[in-house]
Picture 1: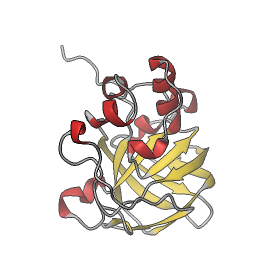
Picture 2: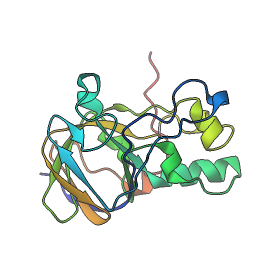
Picture 3: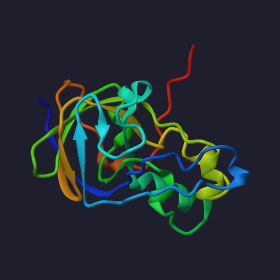
Length: 189
C-alpha cells in the first residue's frame, strides 16, 4: 500500500433533485439541499438521499469529490470574492487533497468510522451553470479541476473533519500542494 494522506472533509452537499436543470438564464430550480455533518455511502448505490443514488446511469459516478482549493483558486484568478462551495453541487468537499489525481484509481477515505472505498472515474466536468451561479468565467476556469466522479465500492459513513486517504495502486500519492491546480489530459500526438 502507498502512504496514508491526511486531509480534511470540509463539506457535504446532498440533494434529492437537480437544481441546475434547463437553461442557466432561467436560474436554478429551488430544491431541498442539505449540508449535513455526515453522509451514509452505500456500495453500488451512492449517498443516501442524493439525486444520483441508486440510478443505473450514475452507478460509476454516484459520489463526486471536489478540492475546495480549486474553488478558491478560481475565485482568486477571476478576482471575485470566495464562492459558496455548495453552489458547485459536489457531494464531498475536501481540503488538502489533490482530488484530480484520483481519476481511474481506487482509494479509501476514513473519517473515523472505518474506510469507505471509492473508485475514481471520469472528471466531474463543469457546466455552463458555473458562469451563472459562481461567476462569469468560472465554467472555463474550472476545467480540469472541477472534481472527480466516483463509484461507491463499499458502504460506510463519512464525517466532516480530519480524515485519511489511502491509495493502493502503487502509482504514488496525490500531492496536496496541487489540490487547486487544473489537471489536463496530455495533448495527442
